[in-house]
Image (tube, rainbow, N blue to C red; front, side):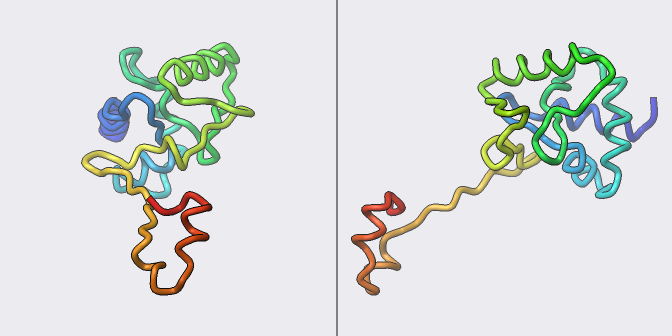
Length: 130
């Protein structure tokens, strides 16, 4: 087994349930930002115990394969983990893995910076103030 393939498998094994990573994201995390296709080649021979189904394409879609059954299996496994697949795609904004040791940042609006401008009412009505 190639060292690159082994590194891909180690990283794929760290993707938590309910989250996904793209081929390009895995390549970039390994230090090879233009090697998304090489990650795809490595994933063709992935060991059975790894969560291979958590790797999707750059659009959040399930990549085409010769074996259509594995595409359906990937969709079912993702949905069992709470990752909804709609129109063949996953919302990467909600389910993309940030990487090892990283946490996903969420934007939160605070009402303090809008108080002085007199726009607090509009923000509260829109549900943006927490």
